[in-house]
Structure formats: structure tokens, C-alpha cells
Length: 357
Ligand SMILES: [Zn+2]
Image 1: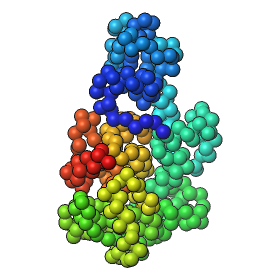
Image 2: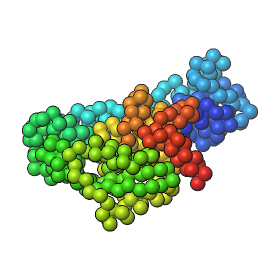
Image 3: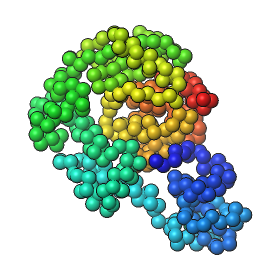
Image 4: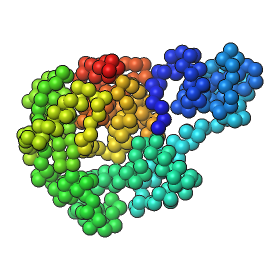
């Protein structure tokens, strides 16, 4: 796992930069460079050469600055070329594009060969960068394509073939996990899908939790419980709603306990409905430990789409599982809290609480 960092961290001071150099922290690569007076070279923070003496080291925001000051690029960490991590992100991004359009799902060894890496190593870096295994990513892509095709009013069979499933029996076999209902149900808006829900009160106000047969599909916070229930109905217009039964009361108790103290974790299954891109963002958000803050830029880099900062912000805003997908831990690079679906005051409260615990 790459160390989670806030982009603000490296803008902060030279001491943090020096610490990153001592740690050979590759996540700091690209944020700054350092030069060594005694050798006349400049390096990336992660350079594997023996640490220089602190008094000989100066920091530079970019390569141009280091070269203008008369330093040469180091021959070991090659600061003029893309870092290993940047190369990995580029490769993983290419593979993601491929999986998004592939007719048949390539095998792990085929994907690894395209990336020019061993299957084991490729699997590892794919997971580190996207938060998903290549297999899970391909499944999410296909799932997304099936949903898209089904809602275009095509016949279920055509949609299945269009999405790259070559045998419909295989799709039916898998679709309950993918869609949470049978394909015919999904196209008609899911008349048979049952959603259990319960409303409660917690320190952040009213809380609604709802679950499909797959897992928790909504956690919402607000001032008005009726409004929360209405929003849930709007999201699932065809579903049958079942007020909390006794088993579900225990679920909601767990959810409230978790929202009050996110550090304890939530071991309930989640039903995360979104596009493959949103799923990637949400998986990345789930890797941020309680008490940490990251920027939208960090998340974009982590999922291998460094330019998709706005799309990342959009995916955070589309999150329907408050706290379980901790979009409240994402702030702007300038430290500004930015928006929060359930109210920016609740976001501030959650962050404060996590920092204190
Ligand atoms: Zn170096």
C-alpha cells in the first residue's frame, strides 16, 4: 500500500520534505526534488542512494529550478524520466481502458504481457493503484455495460451479448451478484426488489440506513427523517420498501455505532451502485484511514487518472453511503472542506471527531 498523503503536506515545510527523503517516500516523487551541494546532483525524494548530509541538501519545486541552480540529474533515480510509479500508473491506465472496451475478458497473463510485467507483479501494482483486482475491475466494467444496455430498452439477451457475455446462462448465473435482481427486473426498474430500511437518531442528526438483498445500499444523514425516506423512494422508484424488521434493527444499530465511531470499522456488506469509474473512486476512498485527509488530486492520482480531478469530485458527490465510503475525508488542496452531500457542518464534525480519537 502506498502511504496516504495529503498534497498539502509537501507544500508545508522543508522538514517534511527532509523526512520524505529519509523515508525514500516514493509518494513524494513529483512533489519536489532535492539537490546535494557536495556531489552537484539533484534527485527525486525516493532516490535509493545513501542519504546526504542535511546541511548539503536544498529543495526545489521542479527540475528546472534545480538545473538553473547548476545541478545535474542523478544517474540512479533519473529525475528527468518518469518515475517507476508514474510508469506503473500509465500502464495500469492503459489496461483499464482496454478492460473498458474488451469484447472478451483477457486473462491475467495476457494483461500482464501487454503491460510488460510478470503476472504476479502486475496484479499487485494494479491493485495498489486502482484498489481493485484486474478481475474485479473487468467485472465492474461489464456490470456497468449490462446496466447501460438494459436501460436502453433492448431485449435482455441482446444486452447480454452486447456487454461481452458470450453465453446467457453464464450471465444469469452471475447477474444476481451483479445487479441484485434478475435482468428482466432490472430493466423494468426492479418491481420485485425489496429494500429494507430504518430511521434513527445519532449525534449528527437523523440517519437512514437501507439494504437490498446484496447489502447496505444507502446511509444518509439529515435534519428531517421524512425527507430522508422520500429521497430513498425517489432513488428506487419501483422498489418495495419494508420498514425495519427485528434483524434489520440490529443492522441499523451497527451502522449508527459505526457512524458515531468510524474507526471501529463496518463489517456489513455494501451494495455500491455506480459506474466503473465511481467504483474505482469509492474503493480508493475506502482505503483512507480514519483521521486522515486527502485531496481530490490525490485520489485522481491513486486511481491512475491524474487529470480526472473534477470527475473524482463528481464521484465523491454521487456517494450514497455516508461514512462507509468516507468521502468526508476528501478536502480541497488548499485545505478548504469543499461540499458534502449531507451538509458541510456534518463533514467538519466527522473530521474533527476522527482527528481526536
Ligand atoms: Zn538520485
